[in-house]
Length: 452
Image 1 (tube, helix red, strand yellow):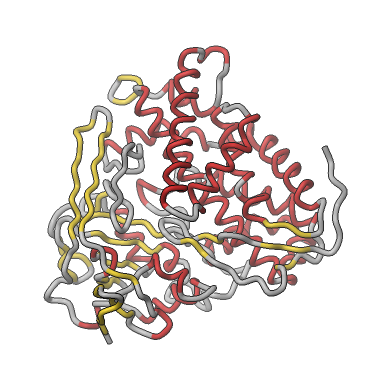
Image 2 (tube, one colour):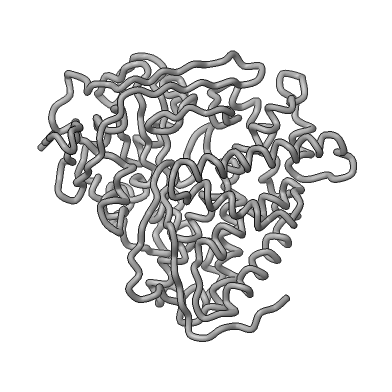
């Protein structure tokens, strides 16, 4: 089953069946450093791991989740094919790592902070100049920082913000629908969550176009130079804005900053660098993820007119539809690092090994969701998905994301009659922590007159 060859002078592993054929060279060595304010600096070295000797061939699968998009235009079929793989297997790709693909196994890894650490969440590990708080923290430190942001996404804040979200969605929908065709990712999906984030922070809305362009370059850049430049510009902007805000905090209160300024960690206030790290975490975690989810949902409805018409006739079904579409198109693949040698699901895991939780595959787990590739708004257990993670690190912004997705559909769908994907479109995907569409060209039958 395992077939390794030389390719272009480099050792390359071919995947275990034809539907998962991948040509990605193995990587060798990664170093990750974290500087978490008052928490001691952590240095994590993740060398290229050889496959554990006790593994049978069936448990050794050279699966590369970052290579899915290069195979064809439907990575979901590749993820669904993992139903025939073991629930936990080892891949020698990307430095060597374990893959958890069943819903129950994914959830167990995410909830077990005693064995699985969040100090590193990318596969392969990535060196960061600025640590991600609370994303890269384990209990009990994680909980202390999480409390500083969890209130941002409670009913009180979301009720107060819902009018702004609807106004933003309505304005973007009117602009988008004023033509009879458009590219959804750049013209709508990236713009809406960026503006909502800016409103939460109290960032100057006149900079929205600039910030949207940076987000697009960071997540969709054509090369590492463009991506890194966009990230540096974003960090510099947020850093400068934070300094200005702290100098004149009384004059410009905001949801996020009020919460951060009120927060206490072991009885002390957050310092400036901790606030910046949390802002960057919210920025990175809440913009591209929501934009990617919007794009998959709108593409599905553009390709399934009967389901779209059902929501138009019964808009009260939209929250239920959102849950099923989150299950069907879960987009996250996130890592954990093994804290100590341990036995898990009959496998011997070694300290420092990476475990990739394929949440994107967990939503297609046939043992939990029969006919998993079929969207069924009436599916009884659709809310059992783990699209937002699970355990202590479950996405703190999930309530806001659900609200944005619901309002987006309520405001957008009525203005796009006969919505469909532009004929002949060949989709391409970007992969990593998030699985998203590079573009989504759409067309509809008649334009709606633009409103100011």
